[in-house]
Length: 75
Image (cartoon, rainbow, N blue to C red; front, side, top):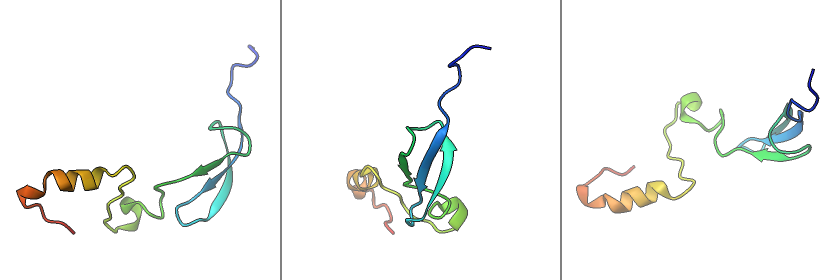
């Protein structure tokens, strides 16, 4: 069997949107890295049933300003 074929599998810490965290094993990043989630099962509408706009890059504001003359309903 060939050596060094598989990626490094190590432990990282995942931080949820509410601040809680857990440790898991993955090939993402390096040993001891922290993955901070923008969207997870505690905040995504598919799991919560609540409707909210997630605007991480200002795209929603950009869209609203561009098309405000069409009389779009804002929430």
